[in-house]
Image (tube, rainbow over all chains, first blue to last red; front, side, top):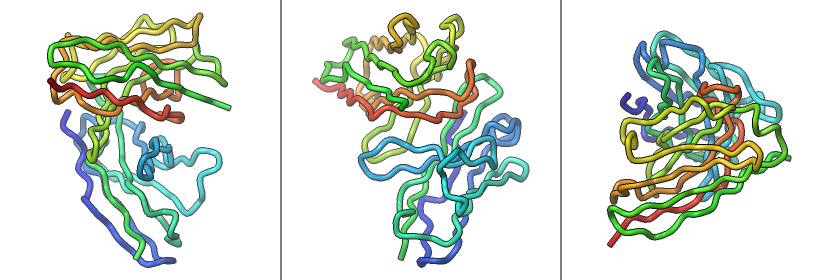
Length: 110
Length: 121
């Protein structure tokens, strides 16, 4: 499975909303509900922000939301804050019982 | 508090071998699948391998199949990754990650801090 496709960078001003896309195929993103989003700050381990397309783990701000349509998943960050500046990765379970991550998106808060 | 602590990363020559370990605490280790995920410095994440909760089922990315072996010792709460025939493109930070279920679903709710493996002559 090839890496899922994400935009290299997305930016927004504080308070704005941004959306990051994650495009795969019917064998991964489109084929099951195990689609996740991770936030990674420099030098740190990834942190789970969204699981199973649209669920937030305990402790994750409700400013983060996820959705999916066909083979494309999306992460929306509302009320953008300086602390949201990080790299974001999507992931999916695949039909061949493997995992695949997205190419990653750098979010910049202007 | 869930903790995952990797060790074993090192500088190794091409063609060499290395074994990574990940000691887990703070959750019932034997109830959850575990994975190894790697990240090339400055680049993205790549899922490498996983093992079911019991260790009876293992999964591998095509890029490491036949060279890497994942295993676990539930009595020691420890996950392993045996890496053989290492290549320069295996150079990365290797993270261990806890899955959400007892089988692979690729939902990683906890991650270690990573262990650096450098393959170079």
